[in-house]
Length: 506
Image: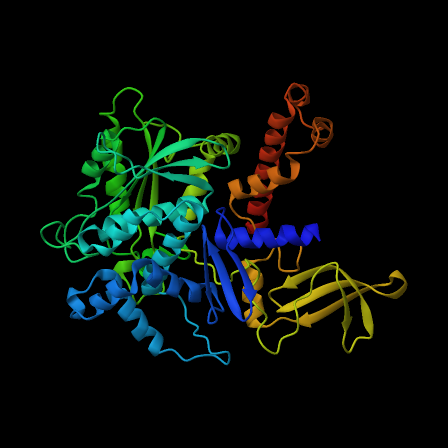
């Protein structure tokens, strides 16, 4: 039971991040959802996005929304324009047999539901202050609040606890909020700025640059303004260049090219480092959360540049050994986790409970290791002891302990729908946490995988593994942590060398 709970929690974190879990229950034909100190309920919420559609309307107020809808489209608030376009988009979709709409998420869905989810996360994990709602409803302040909520969402999902600043204190300037990592306990002060572009996110020619202006034209000013604000702890500064997204042609295979704006941003940040005061430093993330510029596109290439302003070992290209790279990552682990959350934004849960997607109608229940089944047509009944998916064959292979402890290996087909679920949750698909085998071609990824296996091995066991090494006497002087790093680094080099040799022509 505990192992199944562990797998379910891993699924939940993959879907919902490291913030508070979604709290919901079914009662008298109603779905009830607790957000902060408030309980919301409805009969029509099957999936979490159903709840978000109603939640954002309630938070912004139906009266305000109805007044905006009465205006000509081009005069409406950007959020109400998104809502209108979303309704039109939904009207073109066909409902499935259960009366639900299904569609790949495009920029429009990322914008509207992404904002709804960000409001929910702040409301559920911190507090949704009235000032955020007021700013969102004002077209001239919408962009700033919209971007701050994206940043807050990423930080909550990455495992930070936020504390909003008291904006009523006019005696000094304020950062947007402070954030404390639940992983390391470190505290950071956070500032978020987005370049204003005329005609985009409510900005006009009076307060925004022309669309044709350089994406990094305001970077230095935004950075300078952020550094002027008082901060008692380390700083994290977010600056969005607010430009068009990378498209399919900007990728080589699955790897994106470096966008031109990113090269320009890195140059400006390097130049800015020369003028830093003694001890002045900040983690800087230059982003392009560009969904609002490509509302109809499902392929969206948002990008993130991480840079350690005044730091020599974060976001700076240089040669590292595997051990050095690991130590740098541990030193800045909170920021690496945050960067991952930003690169996968937005990740809106579909389920309330954090479990795997429901079984499609007509398909048999998913097999769970440790449970007993009767396998029709085989005459075999017993407990499943192991299971795996062979994607190339589109089959599930199952090990079963039958009557009298006799072992059986059975197989069955897996549907395309279920294969997609497996690909998304390979380690927990069979109900327990069982890391699925995968091809690893990146040396550092292999090094971390090996370290996950051998970091807890005793020093004696590691020395036994390495007893044939020519520098064995030196290895004996290392402590357990250093020895495990050394062993995994050597193992990685050997594995990569063998892989290269196996690909070389004879």
